[in-house]
Structures are given as C-alpha cells and as structure tokens.
Image 1: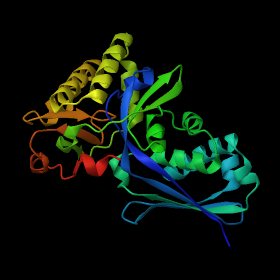
Image 2: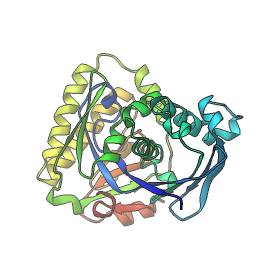
Image 3: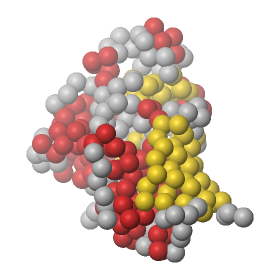
Length: 306
C-alpha cells in the first residue's frame, strides 16, 4: 500500500507594488481561487516519475528524473528546459532537506493546475510552495536559491486572504488583511494573452533605477489607500495614480494609454507590465468592450479572488 500525500497552493495576483516590491515597497496581493496540487506517491529505482497536468487534464510535461541527476544538478540539452528547471528546484530542495532522496526508493509525482498554465497565476510559485510543504523546508529560501523574485507569490500560495507584502532587509513580512470592499462587483480581470518574462521586465526596471526611495513612499501611500478604499471612485483614482507613477519609472506608456484609451473606467497592469492579466474597474459590465477588442477572457472578481 503506497502512501499518497497531496499538497495545494493558491495562485496570485499582485494588485499594487509591481517592481518596487523588490526594493522594499509595500504591495497588496490577492490569492486566487485557482491554484495547483502536488500529489506524491512512493515508487522505486531511485527515480522520480513526474507528470504535470494542465487544468483541462492534458499533460504538459512528463519525464523521469533520477535521484543522481538531482544530487549532481545535471543539466540536459536546452530542449529539456522544464526538466532542467525542475532538477534545479529539486537540487536546491535537496540541499535544504536531503532526506527525501536518502530515505526513499523513488516517487511518482503528479501536479495538477486548476487554471490554464498560460494565465500566469503562479505555475512556478505554487510548485515551489508545494515542494516546500512536502519536504518541510522554507519556501522563501527555496525560491531565493532557485528562481529568485520578491516572494509575494509564495505569501499568496500560503494565505487564503488578502495580504500586504514587504521585504525588510531582504526578509519577507506578510500582513494578512481583510479586503472585501462593497464595489468588488465592478472589478474584472482581463487576460491580455501576452506572456511576459518577469526576468526581462525586472532587468529593465533595475536599469532604470535612480533614486527609488521617493517612489517607494508614494507607492506605499497608494497601497494603503487601495487596501482601505471603501468607495469605487477612490479605489479607481488610486489605481490610476499608481499607473502614472510606474509609467514614469519604467518609461513605458500605461496599459490603458496603449490599448484601452477609450475605456470608460480604469485599467491597471498587474505584475509585469504588458503581462498576463489587467484589472479593470467600471460602472457598467465591461465584458463586451473587451471581447469586441479581442480579449475574450474576462473574469469577475468574485470568480477569481479567494
């Protein structure tokens, strides 16, 4: 009888503080109703049989990984990009807790996304958090040693409520907050279908860094306003102010300027600019507006946010 263990982590959306969260700004992030499972079963031959399912039940990755390749951090040809990434994560996990290889004969591991992989709600952050839960290691340390990034996505993976996330001297501080404003029925998330590599975006942000302290205090103020908003108008204006502030730093037009200039409401980038989802707030349901412009995935707040 093989023991089956299942772990789950929430996906994420970063509402405020993109980029500047890396420099210690306070960011508002929301865990999503979507996430990822990790199912672990015992096997043999010092191998891990790994299978990753997309939300629709299709397999997007399947391979066999030997214990020795994890211990030695073996690198395969670049066509095995996903395998190499996985080996790197498991190698760093092994350095934090070697027992899972030294005290086991092998594993059958399955991951199951409950959102389409291409949505960018945290395929890798949910994986890292699940592996950390399984091996009882620190998810933030695992992230730092593998992918890097601010870690706000791990905080969403681990919490079922809105959070204010901040790095203080490179250590994560997570404050869970109650965020249920009355106007959430006016908020929608629209998928732009333009996957951004966060790495490139972060690099361009780092290039443009002048004196960032003033910006951080402005963004902190905006985060506070947005987190405490009781009225849609106040919330929307703060989102707009945030976009203008970041537009100046990134030397890029806002998403509303470049794609939705005639939109009757406010559109804000989430996470990497030009990336996966944007937040739209409007008096009237904007679904038709976006669909007419070729953006068919429009998700109401209540269906997206935990």
